[in-house]
Length: 453
Image (cartoon, rainbow, N blue to C red; front, side, top):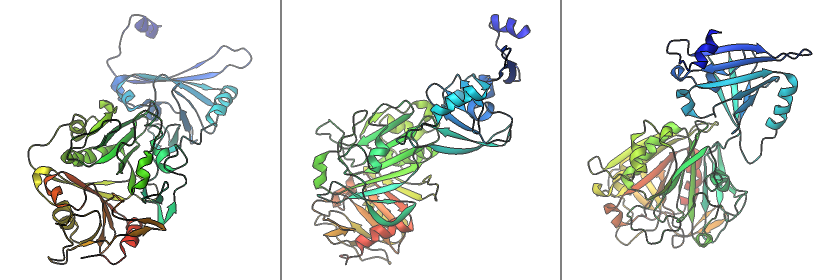
């Protein structure tokens, strides 16, 4: 037994092959069971679930992974135990799968796998394997599958919602935002207000939860969320101070019902996070929580600087970045424009209008200094009159703290984190601009009242 001798002596293979497939049979006299053992060395750089642990059949296989690390095939008869969780870092580590080919054993575990909770969405990720054909992984982890915008009018505890894949009209929110469930944002945030082994996030807010009198020129609020068990992430941009509170039960600040708010959820791949971080760096957000492991953001220098609170001191003092959402019905292009306080730019005129090369209609509180601007070559700023209505919910600039704009001609909607005030020329600011005809149309309906030039 040369391999046993090497094992007993602690020998480590240093030459290929770096993967192994062995088959054994149990000694049951009535019905021996076939057991396949798949293993890989750290030098293989293989991902054990995708590259090693599948049967050589023409069947589609569905793998159900949880914290005990086991899978069942679909169609059935294979149960596998894996010694590593479904995390990306196991590509750099040794791993082994023990797969038992037995109908009864499979059936018992498949009964468990069939009980997927409604509260945990399923992601199906098609992957091309090297040894066989195609199969699918089904993960019982929280994944982000929809981009949505909620616009809550002043005095309302529910919002109006549109989805990027179905933005033909504003729908009524399914439940009050004060409820800890029953609406899309409670669902999105459920794994950051509780402890979840696979969900990590970075939260920033100029009025962080439980921290009074923070002195910052930033006005940005948002959350970057990712799953360590899949290439799934989300970026939430919102206007709500003191929200959400990390790793504590969901709690919408009831005092904010009196004001108008926007909450935007963009589903993205993890590869988009560095571009978002590069944009955020210039606006110096107040990061109040971060538990994203460095292994997840390796090769993301801007995210590292953001997490460490670094402030750019050298040009450029403006940034233009583009990302795309991961909507199955059609990705949405999102452009992020940011400027540092050192730029001295006015973000509406000197950044947004300049980049879009279009007139913009602006819904925002305004001072008595900046006015609607009709000068220039077909590039104006038109101020939307207050009050207005969001599909039956009334809003006004005294109570609505959102700042948004639509382009004219159309298809661009922008959320801006600073109001249309002169003093924002000396402060950092950011605009998140979504290039989508239907989302544009919903906000343009609000702006369609006679705008003030």
